[in-house]
Image (tube, rainbow, N blue to C red; front, side):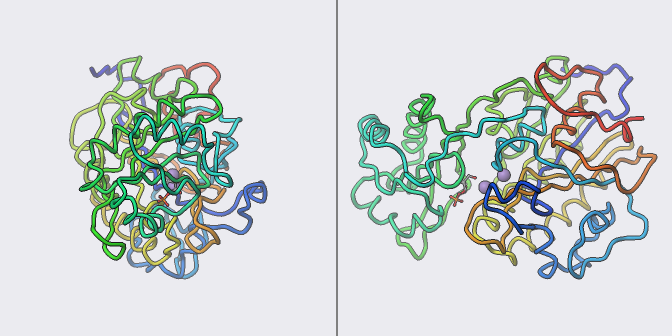
Length: 402
Ligand SMILES: O=P(O)(O)O[C@H]1O[C@H](CO)[C@@H](O)[C@H]1O
Ligand SMILES: [Mn+2]
Ligand SMILES: [Mn+2]
């Protein structure tokens, strides 16, 4: 269903989220234990400027100082820094805010304590497996530690992190993927209960037969809470526009406000899918999440891998720019930070970049800082002439709509 009223400036808007690509700690970062974090800033020395041609051409290095990466004289795009208004630094909070939701009450976390015994008992009873782990851990480390036990004792590894998540690991061969998903659905139902209400239950399947060769697969599946409010996506969908979701977007919004979606197996794959959508005729939003920056490199504190992922993205961005039409708008941003040079293994409370590009742009260069990621959703709604749902936040960026 595509409504074309001809009034909007941009027929199609592409929002591409480079998951965790923050640009420096926010003034309230100390509250989150993240003072000094700077994902992009600390990546400079791992990046090669000749491999960031497209990001630089849009103005990335004009926006953010990075060691060895020079600004361009005439950036093609507009750019700004954005603050996160919500009280959190997780993926859902970040993406929901982009689409208008102000999260004031953080999701429940079990970082220090693990999950309460009553919840574990219920899980064991309903899933028919003994729970092992039940602590905060890095996902790749915990399968090294407990994977063999899980396989040998028909057990189930349950773990959490600094995020509001209950994650279940299962070996695809011995646990069986369908059974893992079944257990996650049980966990999701149990954790709708107020005192256990985590943002996401996540199935973390892996393959291999010994700690040396265990490897997680892209059959990961997230079972998120429904967004707490209607969003810009609902506003578009209800008014007959297309809302296309690439990668984790469908999971993050639990399918709300989406008209079509694809799951990605990698960030490069996600860009290919975005390019495929760009080659079709639609009117509305294409919303892409590229998660490898975060999952493969940020949480693993691997700056070399992180930098190489950004360089791979740049190649894909070049291909994407070739299929961008004259009345398209591209927005590249992030949902939080995850500085791969910082202590720990968790997200970091950071400003995020916003790069804007369209052949239709009449202005170039720096735009005033946004107080909230929600300026993205407000701009999209304003472009398509739809009202943002009640109780949302965000201000349209007039500069690029005029
Ligand atoms: O260490 P892994 O399992 O990749 O965990 C990361 O992935 C989860 C969801 O993004 C969070 O819990 C985060 O810590
Ligand atoms: Mn994220
Ligand atoms: Mn993460």
